[in-house]
Image 1 (cartoon, rainbow, N blue to C red):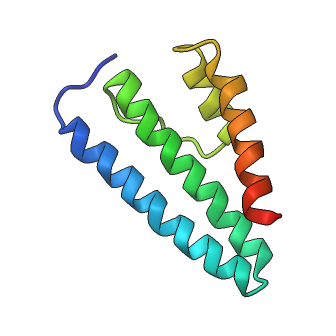
Image 2 (cartoon, rainbow, N blue to C red):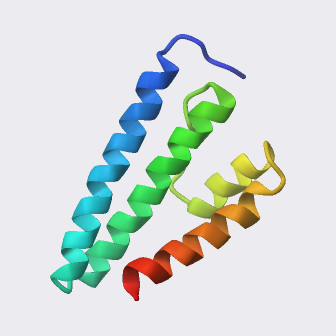
Length: 99
């Protein structure tokens, strides 16, 4: 069900900007060998980007779940190739950050 009672672009910007801040903090923590917290923020960063994508594709608020696989599965119903592409890009990005 679509919800048009909010500013879609503003909500998408919020999730992306918040994710960008998490990315910067994740890198700082990684550089300081705080690997567990770095990975935790990486998870949050990805979750926020998936929320932004959900808002863009569904024109609705994202569901209140924190499981990345569930988020990806929900979005993959909109685009059957999304899941494979997302995991592939995530794999490449993880290797470039943590190499």
